[in-house]
Image (cartoon, rainbow, N blue to C red; front, side, top):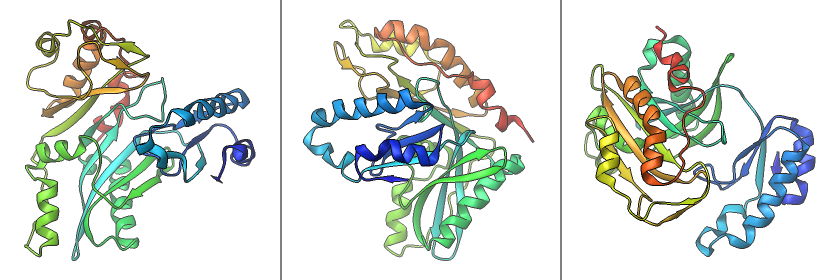
Amino acid sequence: CWIPKTADLREAVGKIGYPCVVKPVRGSGSRVCYPLYNDDHVQWYEEELAGLMPRIPPHMNWLLKGGLICEGWLAGPIVSAAVAATGLKVAVISCALHLKHDENPCTGFGSVSFDPARDDRLGQCAAMAERLVHDLGLSLGLFDVEMILTEGGPKVLEVNARPMGGEMITALAMRTQTDAYGFLVDHYCGIPVEMPLLLPDVATGIYKIVAKRAGVISGSLDLDAITRLLPAEVLLRNYRLRPATSVAPLEVLGRILVVGTDVQSQLVALDEQTVAVGAAIGVELITATPSISSQLAPLARH
């Protein structure tokens, strides 16, 4: 349901039923996106929006101008497919399974790339992404297709007429040795391009450093000490790790990228160090829930 104004929220939720998800039409980065499981949650969401509206900075006024969307909750991991279209060919060049946590299952926690040929269900995701891009006439560029991998197969979450966001562009470059924006510029300029190819037996992983609740980063923050807590050969993207910086609940403070032949073990090690990293930062951090090993179980199937 489309909800043009907050006053219509309860009517929309009544049509969709519980559990459901409510989010801004024009939202990005999972801002103000939450699952609702009962009437108390609806009341909380209404109060949350009422408190948020006066605090939205001018450059973010677009966030709630389009109203809200209420949609049914689908169980299963989110799978992203990066799809390239050259005018002559449409192909998935990278797939990733998203990690999650229980603080808000609508917000991402990182991702792991995979070979869709390893599993029929994951292969269905790649096939659906290619078909969607072709059928929508997205004939030139890089596109991001997100699906929820349910027990009944993939269900479309969104199709973006743009490359994937966050650090997934970096992860793609690490896994294919291809600069996505260089690929696009050459393509748009009429220079012949080849489909990016995955390096054999190489995967990439992205792990978010996320504040569990509001706090203040330690005034004596030592980034070198934090780096020593991380597995070797990881790339730390620092967004908000600054001494004495105030942080909000669920705020992404940084991302860690890993690449190699055993990314799952590296991510498990990262998650095990999260409590220690949080103590060094001075802010409690979110850990993966359920465990990363169980979340990545679909990637272990053949």
